[in-house]
Every structure is written in structure tokens, then in C-alpha cells.
Image (tube, rainbow, N blue to C red; front, top):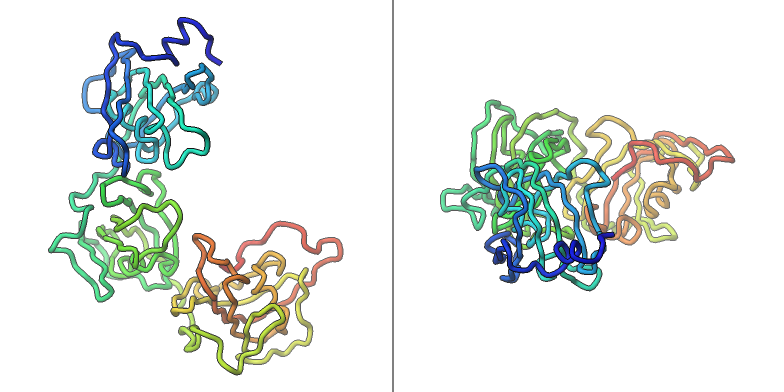
Length: 403
């Protein structure tokens, strides 16, 4: 808590007039869509080093303390005993604009109006906030492409309408298949040039199966060779609609670092769109059809662990997971899988191969980041591991649970 009196008024009260400048902040300064043109007051406490300041996407290293106007401290790096590192692209527009006006090593007092003091919609009543900020250091973000607003006429367009341009050619000859594993770097911007995600900033490339990426990224990655860098414009039809994503066309720069060949999955079933007329249905509403009978007699119970091979598709025929690609069966307690999958597996015997049509409400129920809609699985039950009486339903989920 900050003491009341003269010291408090200097920090959390009105900024006064001595050595205080007003910085007009709007969308042009921070890339925050709809940011009002309101003043942020800044009082320079200690000069920084000469040279440029940070850009709106740069990662900054800061020491700071934040107060409400009543003098209450609500946030401070002092308890950490070290600066905090964060990209300015994900901070409130007023705070971002203030830091962008500073030099490395500079300290300043900043008064931010409520209209500019929050990212998104505040959970409490918006209020003016006051910060003492020290810009310890900053690291430049990847350069914003000059054509984030839309693909140029020279961009290549695929049959699906995806637009891309080669930024740097690769040094390899092999291109990944949709079922191969790749490692790649990316940086992503909205159409204003505001960066919203970057493995390059985090310095951790992304390892993934190509088929797990958005349709537009899948299409781009399968056209690349190792070492190649591509700029891709993703319309909403080429990506998933996830909470927190910017609206409109997104621009990604991808750099393919590695390809790890995997095994081909089975072909997409011809009946993924809907279960056929001869499919049976469980009491909970999962449709299923036996593809080949098993040799066992026992069926797994709800507390048992199963070992299976499986492949899963959405109703448009898009593969989203397969243990056959990895050539590694999945093993997990039935209680740890979603309701429809666990329900259907209890109809099977060891050695049986069955196709399942699982309604969305019995699968992931359109949860963000999960396959949406009805899901279709081909499952082969390899083994049933009976749960010990004392362990039914307990323990953590083993690795290898289906997605």
C-alpha cells in the first residue's frame, strides 16, 4: 500500500503540470482496433540510452509498480526481484503506447485513462491506473510484412483460394505429407500488423503432425521444403474459429525446419458424413458398425484400461488423429476418454474392429481447439486390462489417449 499524503499525490494523484507530457493514443499507435484517441500522461523520471525505442510487437523487459488512484498497489514486479518479459502486442493499449515512447534504461510515471488501461473487456469497473515503469531492455520482434492488409497480385493462389508467397526458398527436396510430423517456426499478425502469436519470439519451434494444423496451414506446409519460409494469408475459411483470435484475414510466416516421415493412415471411410442404415446404436446414442469380428469374449468395463489402435475423422473426411500414423497403440482407462468413446468401446471384444459415429454432445461438444461436430473413429481393440478393485477410476491418464 502506498502512503497517503504528498508522496501519494505525486504518484497516484493528478499528474500535475511539471515535466508531464500528454501522449495521444489511438489505433494507429498501438494497433488496438477501436482504441479511442485519449491522452496518456507521462512524467520522465530518469533518462534512457540514446537510440530507438521498442516497437508495438517487441518483447520488453520491465520493472514496474501499478497503483489505483486511492493509492492501493495492485501489481508490482518488486516481489519477483527480477523484471518481467512480455510482448507489447498483448498489453493494454495505453500501457503499450507509454512503453513505446521510452528508451532503454528510462524510468517514467504514467497515468492511463480507463479507456486505454485494459486488454479486452474489464471484469470490474474501469478506472484510471498509475504506473512507475522502468524499461530495462527490449528485443525486436520479427519485422511486420508490408502486405499484411491483403495478398499482393504476385501471390500464388491454390484451388482452395489460399494465397501464399515464398519469402525464402528451401534447401531440401522432400515435402511433408499430411500424416508426417514436422517442426516449424511461425509468426502471426492481424491485418493491422499487430502480432498475436510467434514461436520465433518464444524461441521454441512447434513440433506437430501436419494434419493437426488448420486447413490453410496444412496446405501451405505440404507445399514446403526444409529451410523454406512462406507468407500465408488465411481467410476465415482456411482456419478454425477459436476464442481470442483476431477477426478477418490472418497473416502467417512459416519456416519449415524438419520433416519426420510417418506411416500412412487408412483411407478416409466412404461413410463419414453419416452412419449407414445398417449401423447399430448404443443406449447413449453412439452409432457403430463392426468391420471385422474379434476373437475374445470379454468386453471392457467402465473402470478397465484398454489398448487400441484407432484413426479419427471429422464428417468432412479430415483426419485429426491416428495411432497407426505413429505405429504406437494408445492405452488409457475408459474413464478418461470422452463419454461416447467409452460407451462404444464397451460393446467390443478383443480383436474386433469397429467404426463409430459419435455425436458431438458425446465427444468434445465443439470445445475450442478440439475436433468439432460428430466424430468418426475406426477402432481395433487390442487388449483389456482389468482394473484392480482398489484402483477403479483412480490415477492420472496415461500417455497415448486418443484426441
